[in-house]
Image 1 (tube, one colour):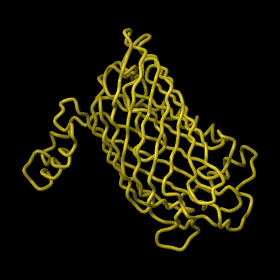
Image 2 (cartoon, rainbow, N blue to C red):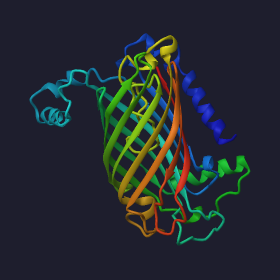
Image 3 (cartoon, rainbow, N blue to C red):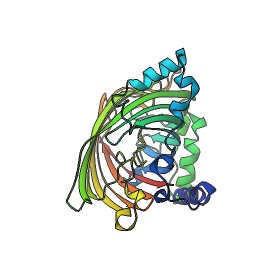
Length: 357
């Protein structure tokens, strides 16, 4: 069965399982709701098959952690309790009574190939074959204006990532010639990345009817690890009908899980026409890259590598539709060159489907 059918099966399984049955966000306060998201990215949307060629991610964002401050070890005057409180208090809105805390969990896979996928030999002037199979856990602290995310990603690079098998399956079903150079992919290596990201809603405006509006969200963060080390920043502008109170489009990137609503004014907690939302968005993002294992090669073993670009930018345009507790978004991403000798930048499509229950 083709990759699109695999995605469909995953959606059906998730939505038919007991946690999704007979649950509507409008029937409960926001702090009690889960949000599930499925993200899929592929350069076939730009009619290419190279570089960052495929990504898929499942994500769950928990209800608000109301019990967090009630934990005995958190309240006690012990080293652990004091350090945890100090960590929480570094957030600039820590005294805000409307602050919410959540955990999120993700499973995902990414794959990268050179432009020349016909050759079975090593293509020395092109990017390495690589796969990244990972899971992550993140702690979110937010209010209506700001979202702070602390995330840990753990995974495996190399043939254990099953990137070759996943691509071969998709290519065989779609009748596309398989990539012949996976024997040259990066060696197996455990990967870890520590990530911090902040999103700040700077502008939020609505017309007199309260439904047509716009908002602007800035973000910035840092990632440290043997997989990737970088600084990033960017902004997103949204314009449309009944814009939700989440923090923008959800690309498959570190700390990119933004689909959870913030408060009860979100369309997912409304009825009638107020339960509908449609908007357009545009975003610009930039990274200062210090390490990228998918270009720099393995950390502890000799492997194929290529000289990377230190500064990478991207421009994103797309649209989102929200009906009741479902939200679906499509974005087209235009990314600048990532390594020396790359003939041009890259474009790929990104689909995100979320369900709040």
